[in-house]
Structure formats: structure tokens, C-alpha cells
Image (cartoon, rainbow, N blue to C red; front, side, top):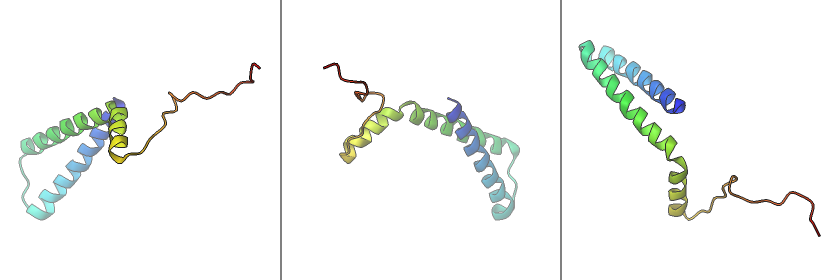
Length: 88
């Protein structure tokens, strides 16, 4: 959850900087603060929800992509390995 939050905050800051530079140098007209805040909130919510979904369902997405690309991937937490001395 923290990763998704930090990612969303970073994306929102970068978008805010680009939006300000666009208004200052390309449009040469500053928009009202209300419009800028509305855009920043929409960017934050959309990036947070998408990054949370991707991080939460990462194993399922990896499984789906391995089926599409026809590559088998080993999961170290499920792989059984014998590391002791034999009993015979």
C-alpha cells in the first residue's frame, strides 16, 4: 500500500510540474487554481488506484503473462528442494 501511495504522489508531483510549465510557457495563460487542483486530484486518484491494483494482483498478472508468452516461471516459495542428508 505504501508503494502505491508513494508512486501516486510522485506521479502527481511530476504531472503538476508539467502542467505548471505548460500553462506558463506554452499557453502563456494561468488557469484558475480550482482547475489545477481538480486535475491534480484526478491524476492522484487514478494513479493510486491503478498502481494499487497492479501491486495487489502482481502474481496473477505474472501468471497470466507467462501463459501468454509461453514461458514457465518457477516460484521460489512453492519450489521444494532437498537440502539435508539422505536417510538411507
